[in-house]
Length: 129
Image (cartoon, rainbow, N blue to C red; front, side):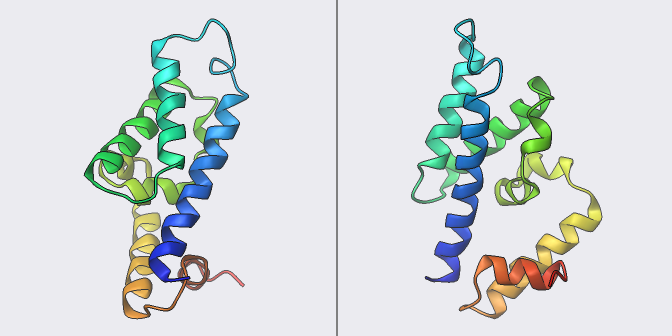
C-alpha cells in the first residue's frame, strides 16, 4: 500500500465511522428529518464512498463538516481532528495552531519518506508510542 492510498483510506474510514454514527443519531434517524439533515447524511455517505479527492469532494467535505459543527453540536465531538486537516479550508478554523503544526509535520514526513504510511507518520509527529 502506498502512502497516498493509506492516507486516503485512513480518512475514508474516519468518514465512514462518522456517517454510521450520524445515521443512528437524531435528527438523522428520525422520520421527521428535514432536507438539510438528508443533505448532510447523503453528503457523508458520498464522501465515505469516494475513491479520490478532487476539488468537488474537497468542497463537499468542507461544507459537510462546517455544517455539522454549526447545526449539530451533539455530533461535533465525534468528528476526528484528522478530517479537519484533510479537508482544510474553513475546517482549519476549528483547529488550534499547535495542531496545525503537528499536521504539517505529518505532511512533511509523508513527502520526505514516500513509503511511510499515514499512521506511522502520525505516530512520529504526535510522538505516540
